[in-house]
View 1 (cartoon, helix red, strand yellow):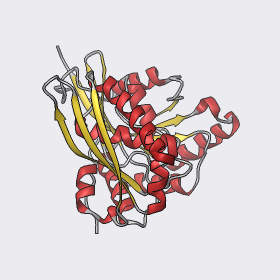
View 2: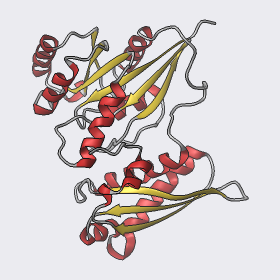
View 3: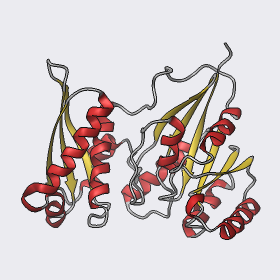
View 4: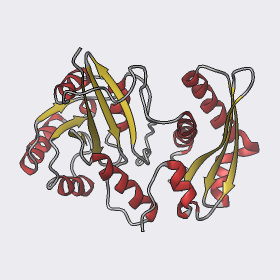
Length: 297
């Protein structure tokens, strides 16, 4: 049987819904999501199948004007994910509209040779009059192979988008086995699941200054998995927020993360969390390596 396979770089501004879209296209969760911008920090590949075609989706961090080293590393990862892709899918928040962050992306895409597909997301909550104006502006700025209007959260238009992406993939052998949905290791995914819970429970209180490191990941003789993680924060006040009164918040984070990991891995999970204050964790090369970011000068 003839096979088709290619890569699609999913790019856009922070909170455009890129990770939600990747999960919808794959058909299960491979990327964490939260209401907080910049949840995705590194390149993550999700693998979607349709018929004889495998679509390797590169979920990238949101692109913005970055000053901190850590932010610059995320933006570099995003542009790196777009390099040599068979197609770049530019995801635009139809409700949020166009602004400085979108302008930064349009300028960066203007000179790129890869074919580009425009994906207008969140149309279920957007003003349709404004949306049509956005479409006109965007198509005047860049040449797109096509425009797709979708809602990744409700699934509206996602099947049509998947068909469109598949039609753009070149002939060639699949990159991943049919049952593999992501390139993330269990160790990395465990850290991401815990970080997602931190964002979901504390995103209004805790800024971006936190990271999760999986210190130990091992299988017990009974087949269950033991995971030890440390949550890195920059200040004592942030540690107090993560812990909560009497450690209640940390227990809740651990409980929700443990349940999701057990469902993901299909085995019982023993998850141990502790919080460490590390004022310069975002200047630690080891953290960059664990997260999957390149060190930038």
